[in-house]
Length: 285
Figure 1 (tube, rainbow, N blue to C red):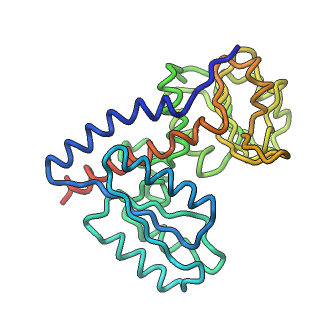
Figure 2: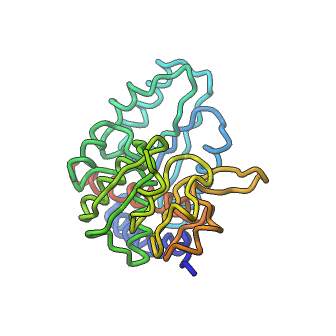
């Protein structure tokens, strides 16, 4: 029987360290602050916002929300964004995407201060992740996978790791983080020939393709570590991931559930990024 990798346990372990770091910053007169910028009222954005605000509160980080109307004009949007970007009291900016069709994210991606870009939106941070620059902020979900592996004592060094999914949110940046830990990486996607065979060969399998229950028991090698990044609603209206959890848990050594898995760690990673950003920004002033 496999061990369930619970995100709540990982977040709890990160919490104490974060609280101490925030205390140290406040003793120096620095109050770490995250600004969430949301355009419109999408339910998934609101759900993540609630979780982020709660996590920031738990560790002592100030969290503010700038809500903008869905029909905002591009020029007004850029002006509002730049005010936040230039505010010295704001250390991290989380901008919910995708935008409504009337907005172009290109200008704000170029505009955002790299140290305030706590979820890897700018090309500068993307380049830092791919070059191995320690000051780069990886996307929170990709880094949450690394936090889970670390907490459960799973060292990727020398391991065969297969990532199913090639997005810039998870697949590609996660491959760089794992490569930095000396893993041997294979990136797959839904068009990969013999996807099942490639997955079976993995010692660590990360499912991030965005397709519900894509990974079946037959696609997982005996004793593999399985990390599920997907989140969907199944035919019964229940949350599920990219992995058929009930079937795969019989074969895996470790497996992350959905919900209560990787998603539970992302806001802790976000908090960590805000703390790091506060250090970077205040030390360079």
